[in-house]
Length: 376
Ligand SMILES: [Fe+2]
Ligand SMILES: [Fe+2]
Image (cartoon, rainbow, N blue to C red; front, side):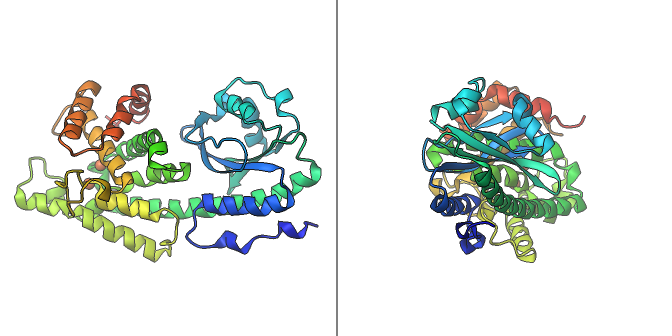
């Protein structure tokens, strides 16, 4: 029997709250029964890149780690847990864990003495880990492990339903794109690169902007939808080889409002308006052509009136257009791309910190370009 403190708190299911909020409330409840559990954290797994990324955490003692990612294959012990679907208890961290990777070094510095790690699954697919840490030695005896598993199930359920909601939104927008034959116009690789560049920029400015890992992930997930409104643009304009005349350009620019309508409709049809961070998606679609000096469209918003997620995606989109070959231009070398972005920063159009993020991440950008090349 689970004791009464283990009952599912009703507040857990409150609509519209973020996974981080829900994790914090679960932690509150857990602390009533087990005050020695100082931290609960969840890392999400991306099977495409083999990266395990910090996602949400509730940290009451020690310093939270965020914006951190590493390859699952680089941690033998975690790889084994994931494939065997086994939990791991460490009664004495300092006697067991070697400081051989940044995560272990961080763990040792925090003063945690014991931990309990649980792999999470969605429909049989590994989706990440849940970590419980305590500054007390041997905090996780068999009885506690059983109770932590109950909590892990709750976190797993919430994560699965949230991931599914996000996937439904993404999938329906992408299916709509396929129907509209947009594949010829913008490649799948462009969409994947948009996710990767947007994540890279968001991570770089996360501390300054107060972006949580969860928000960073959502920016990356929703960035590829920025041009979803192009579904509504007639082919004669969308696929025109030469430059657009004034009327055609005006028509093309309506893809932003059309995109907003599509997103509103998807959210409404699937009852997903309450999905945490659905506003991030709307902001990206609605504001990815706005410039800081007010010269963008459709609203001519200025500086901070443009949501940070849109400022990030704007820089990512322009960078990708410059650095890739398009029917009307060759791919520019990185240095020329950065010069052009800097010129736009100096002209007051683009967010300088977003451009600085790209410039500081040359190696990562080259890796993304090599991994997500356009098909010849
Ligand atoms: Fe656009
Ligand atoms: Fe784009």
